Length: 213
Image 1: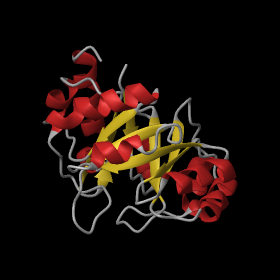
Image 2 (image 1 turned 30 degrees about the vertical axis):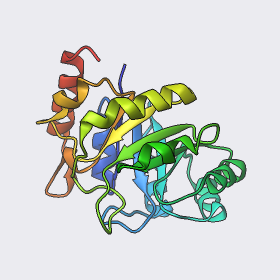
Image 3 (image 1 turned 45 degrees about the vertical axis):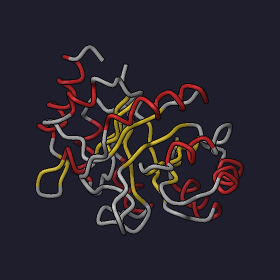
Image 4 (image 1 turned 90 degrees about the vertical axis):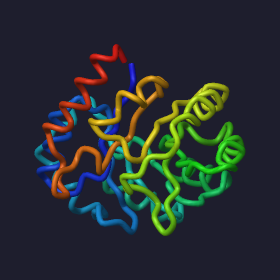
């Protein structure tokens, strides 16, 4: 089954919608972004919202391991997502300090696959995202999905999951499903006017179900 992550939740309403959805993971961004949230906000939103088996992912960009550990001390994050230029050594440090699984974002370009190989034995999973100048993610821009099989093959060689992010919407997800990724990471594609849209979430989930994934 394809795993589903709804990322960039930034309000109590977003969290309620994501918890009521079929997503496996809820993502929160603790880095410069229009979707940035504080640990205190997330703690408040989750106080009266049982996770029901869903896992929480904290997204960080080039943050020090100690800074990330401070957030994990406040929140029950299951997974840390390093979405910047973190080196394998820095990712290993995050794992050691937080005692959490760590996913590494890989931004698609000609050298991305070789970069991915450097994290073998360190990263517990990958999120392959579009490369957009000046932005780390949440751009609503898709990369060339014909490259997806190469990333999936490398992740399988390493024995870890590979999520595909960037520009996935209810209108184009069926094309991505043809490649059968391990997981799909969606933020802007499930939003309407900047808020998570339960209707779009349901459309995403129905298409995954219809595709037999």
